[in-house]
Length: 228
Ligand code: HEM
Image 1 (cartoon, rainbow, N blue to C red):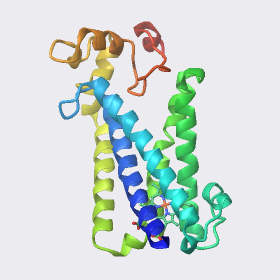
Image 2 (image 1 turned 90 degrees about the horizontal axis):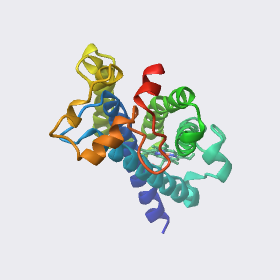
Image 3 (image 1 turned 120 degrees about the vertical axis):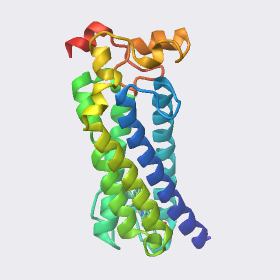
Image 4 (image 1 turned 120 degrees about the horizontal axis):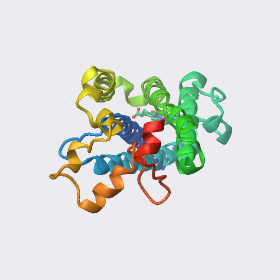
């Protein structure tokens, strides 16, 4: 039973990290306003959201299984208060920091419609911090860091996020991306015929950020966006 908890704890940690990587990459990609891998913009936003929820589910499995695994020597406090674990306080502490940051991201995303857009956007940038902290935690505390596949997987995650961040800050991101065009009042390319249905296009016209999906999403007008 103890071994089962340990395997589940490790496996769910790895899956959570991979999903967190997908979330960061799609979050950046969604800001470009373009279709990604044939997915229209609203689908990129939906996958971003679904991957983030799934990542939180695997994170919950990760911390709960390791809480009951006697070898990890964790208590509830160590899950949320960084650097208080009995064993490996630094590396497990980084896990707790990542956990707190992810929790803050989830809560502020759920309350998004109550938070002024500018503040919400800044809070959401916490994702850029949560990801590398979680990555360092996995490498520092994981049993599998010594195996061949874990560093390879970590390298792929780093390459994916580094590539997305480099693209984000390159001139190409905004130049032909539709964020600038939408600010100027033009329609994004995926709304110009081959993209989503007229209904989806209607909904998209009111959105600046790909996280604006779902019943709680705040619909902004073109005029509001231009004023930001
Ligand atoms: C976003 C948050 C987190 C992510 C993405 C994450 C991810 C990971 C990953 C990838 C590993 C390596 C697994 C392996 O070697 O196969 C790991 C190990 C571990 N994590 Fe986390 N973790 C997070 C939060 C936490 C928290 C809050 C704790 C509790 C303080 C924690 C406790 C542990 C422990 C004890 C291990 C070592 C498991 C072993 O014996 O190999 N993690 N984590």
